[in-house]
Length: 195
Image (cartoon, rainbow, N blue to C red; front, side, top):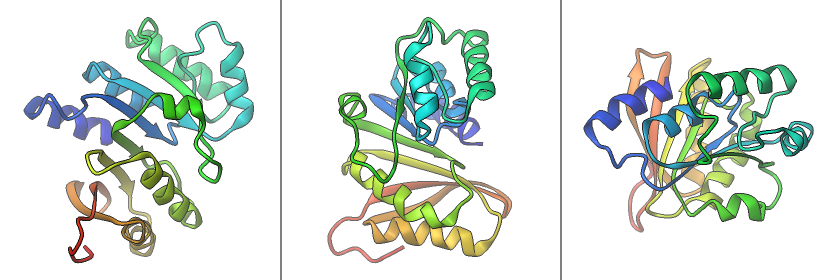
């Protein structure tokens, strides 16, 4: 859904994905691949599984990998080939454990003009870590989009509360009924109310 939203919005505003883009919790990389295909941005895909990260270091094309294991890695490579991304050096996969300091490799790809998060976790206990890493990777000019499938309204509130506690305001910019939402986050300006 986030890639669909981005495609729609880029038809109106070509600068939406300008600059360096990072996708957190990339999974099979769909949103990052879409961002690369829809724009001229440098896109960083991230995951926190060291074994897959190490696999990416020995692959013939280390610019593209995923964070979920061998079969997904193979699928991602097939997806990038099928979509014409294999030749683009604008895609890179990096390990990013949300609890650790951000690596020099990830930092060298920034500063990030856009952060993408597409349903990257179903575990509400890590929403605080997600909000923290977003805060560490962003600045006041960073565009931040989080897509989220609502499994419970409590879970949705926990996610947004974690973001508010890290100093973000948010607005719903797209939704499909009460099931799927895309939020745009922004650093709160001094003196603004919580949203």
